Length: 342
Image (cartoon, rainbow, N blue to C red; front, top):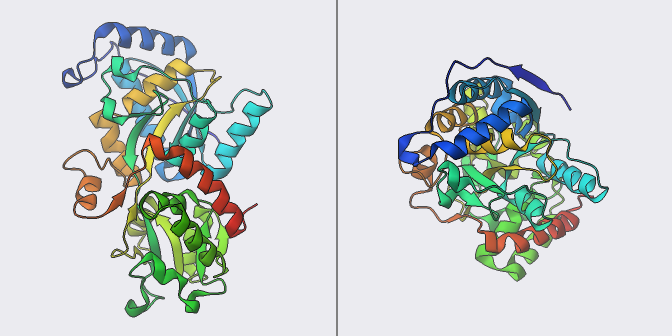
């Protein structure tokens, strides 16, 4: 996997976390000292953050804590496959390839259920308990939104889906739909519809013979008109489309809206856990949140005034809870088999 290495010099002195976060000096001092000894981090994150985004985050991180950490960026090759790689290496007794991973909460649910996080008491660093998940294993930094998406130049307005059930219309049969490996999107519908209805829906969707691939494969095929509708696409791709001028849009009236949370967590057996924990806490700071939104188009739906908070207002949105994680994880694998993913 392509790796980008950024080594950026910090400034003299340690800047404390914002007073509004109530951080005491000792935990930060201890963690910063340990991070300084480790010196680097293997950071796995979505490709949408881009090398330029990681470089800027690294610069601000080092400046904030008076460090000179080398952040080795590993853009995801597909979250489903990357999570499977972590699980497989752990089962074989092999240390993880990455120290820290930014994944949707469904991916982190898989790791949490297999005890593959290295927990940390992030509250000691002033992190709001509301954004700490999976028994102190992860910190939520942003929300995605996932809906059916279409090419505005290829699909007539009257054909734009108005409900999830509209995707079962026979006219979409035979490769006109695109379904990604993100089957956790469909599994989340069970938190609103129940397992029986959702499973029946997925079986009917499989009979539509959708094109199967990763999210990264679905996006260009939708742009080229090789598929007419993506069963689900995430808003970071819609953000990319707006930036590049690609004619893609959400089917906005479809509800419920699926909202995975992007979480960051340190993996069990990580070689640089202190840098990983400090990096996770850093992502909750205003400066890191601003940069994440700038480069990915995503923000937290739970922070008033953010674009995500405004977008979710008045909509029926599905936010997964820790208690629902086992069901969503199980159905994610089941739905992958039903749809034909190996």
